[in-house]
Length: 235
Image (cartoon, rainbow, N blue to C red; front, top):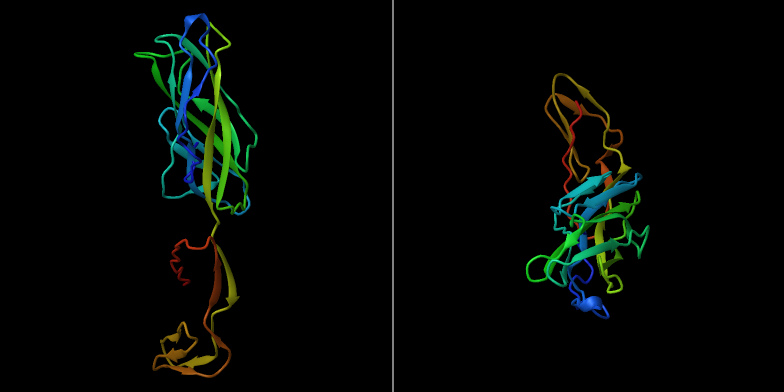
């Protein structure tokens, strides 16, 4: 899975200590971290965000997916041409503030390095977001270890960053109820209360005092984010 605020995605290569059996030492470079993009958490229900390793698609459950970028982690691996390798990924319940799980890579076992000894590995995963979470960004990491299948002891491990951007859910609370006051009618007409609380009526409506208020609501959410509020008309 991949977040909008990805951790340091570019890293210097990590190398195995030596090439046992005459093999070239393994090398891994982290080209990009796992970025889950931006979501809005449910006010009460826990949800999940998943990035698949094969196509990099993002799916969500009990959260709202927001417009923005996301990406699977990308690692460049170098070893001897056509030598088999094993790949293992830590599956931490929580590393940093990001609750990672279900890590996966796109290499069907047994993996081997084709061509000139260069191979790109993509990694996806799942993150769980607690209900009501409003932390602007959450970060974590996981380790990826690669070793030769037939000549163990040449393993190399790198740490891959991951992150997600969580937007606080919109909250609306009523401060003042919309009130049209008292009036009488001699036919069909309208009573209007504007956003300043001023009341007017059409010709067949007689205004007769009473409490007049414009509706007043407090909207809460993440500072700096835009929102829209279509009016729902009652009939």
